[in-house]
Length: 424
Image 1 (cartoon, rainbow, N blue to C red):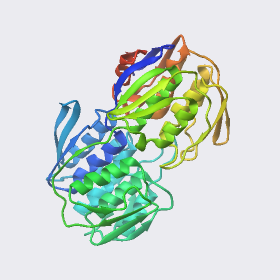
Image 2: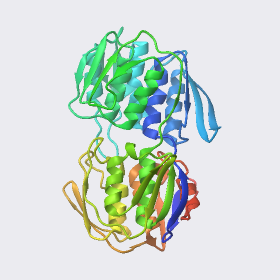
Image 3: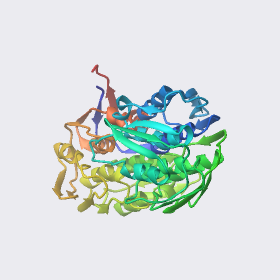
Image 4: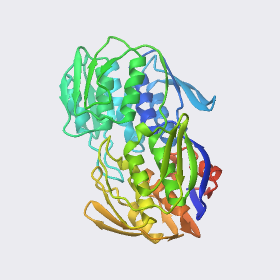
């Protein structure tokens, strides 16, 4: 398994291009199942999760072509003219929980779907009961057998659905299903994330009728058929936030091309509180870190609150900040597993229930650490950038799930990061 070697202590200077958003690309790929017409996508990030999703869709009969550089973007044409096997097997779903996003589109278009239950994951449980209850309200007959969701419906019908909790993938699954349902569907307590908005806008380009996107109440009027479309995936606000955290911790000045302040306001607010100078320019965000950061306290929450996917990165900033910051995690129960690894680098972090108390120190020290999940990997990379000496991060395959060539982008900013390739 590959690992990173990082020699810390270098400020970051230069420009980094922000890739397409993984969390927007994955549901948009699934949206191609809703139509027999081609869907052309641009700015699709070349990530492990994207490759996994494309393999899953190919197994159902979807044809994909054209993935490669196109005017600086990754472009692909998806064509689900024929769906031979409306099934997401366990072998695929166990490697990527977003595979459950095929459930709604398959059921809406094909009238049937067999999708493996995703089970747990390293950062905690992410139950799919909200997806199931919503589809049942739309008339689906759903049985859970031998670890699989088996769903049938001659045609889904519109319904009023109120989710018990804010769920991003649940909102996306139900919204896609409702596009081909008979009548009007209203989703109450809907997720408001920019990635949900991006999916909705792609669906609108395909001919869907959707209102209220970006609010907690989304209304969808079903149509008989969706048509061909072309769409550009939004920039990845989590990748952008990660690089802004990196410059906050390491110092320097970075221009994040493609990043948008309006999509990551909660992150920007905390970084500015920490001392980062942020300027929205026409083509992206410019960030300057002139001094050691100040510690900040935060509490994760659904959008527009502070994203749980930025928690580990901000903890790395707090680890080298002046003062003490409190980091409260309210979304996932096991999302402090990176704390023990940061302690190996010298970070002073105590856990009190669902809150981490981070006492900043002037300098971390290099050590060998292990990544436990995608965003924990990013937090450890930031910590390594400011640690004295050599830091080695094992199991960076987690990082490759959500970050496009991170080591190359960091090196272009002056960091000293090297990927060490090893056989399994």
